[in-house]
Image (tube, rainbow, N blue to C red; front, side):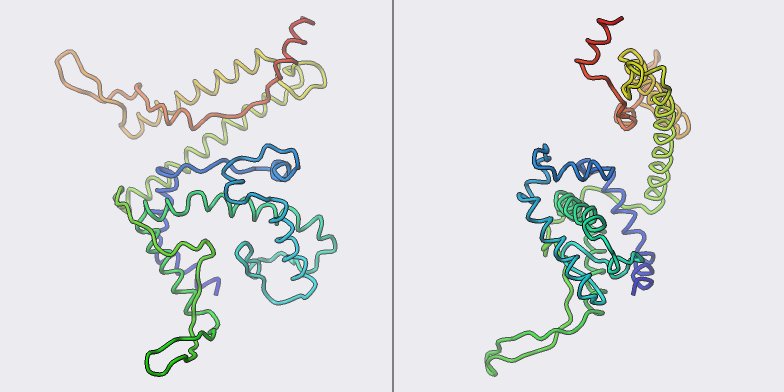
Length: 306
């Protein structure tokens, strides 16, 4: 089944590329927790939970208890598969049914399932409206899984025969979205989409390299706000912010040279020419990197000492 589904996606890779294009160019996705501690913090009683999460799931604790119970009951019964609105673990290699410590092993899984489910619900309908190929791919996947699902009996009402039973094969997405209004806002050219994926991959790699360089500088003990502190000295922090900004600008200029891009400007003779040194500020904003900074209180304390 898993190999067949992978082959299906490969056969429709043009639609997958179109989906990737829309996700990067049109859809605004809220920042998700990137570390386990950040995820756990969302479920603290006094945590400042983001609105996009509480709008979809008002009671995080109740939802967590429900999912945790699903996992634990499944482990005790040792049934062959677990597929619910939030979980689909039958295809994983993790031996979750043999867990000796469910409180430790299931907690991060249930929390991640809650956050990801809420995150997806914030943008999935918009994706399907903006991207016709994604909507088509969704229908293809639904038919593929319906054809391979177990028949279930339903009751049908017919004019002459009255109530009758029939066996049908049906699989539906858990989000409950049955239909959307299509918006034709983008064109889909295979070569352009492939180039877009490669550009995003390169940009992500460059951002990762810059972030690694900043992290290396941050790790130098003599740049901390004071001995044994994990916070950067205020002036060092300000200089690193400038470094990131100028590195971002230089990256955008390099990209313009490479792709012969740039914003057109008027020459003395009235003609227009693309100037690679005039950049798109959106390209620069992508490189924003969070850095360790001393609190205002800590900064004032250090300034007094100095």
